[in-house]
Length: 74
Image 1: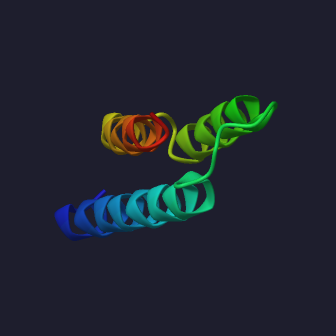
Image 2: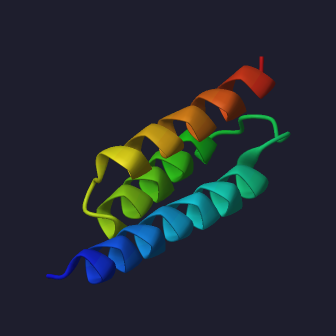
């Protein structure tokens, strides 16, 4: 794999992870935790991580977003 291709692949992964994390945030922020909502959040969280082969970058972004949503519900 060439350096340029690796950079392009990395860019697509980072861009996609940010986009998916933002969509996840928009879907769940500011809403009270109702029964089943935590399970849905965890399911979607896992799906997003799987989409990016549990990359360290994606994991960190998603954990930050999940923590932010948790903080907002206190």
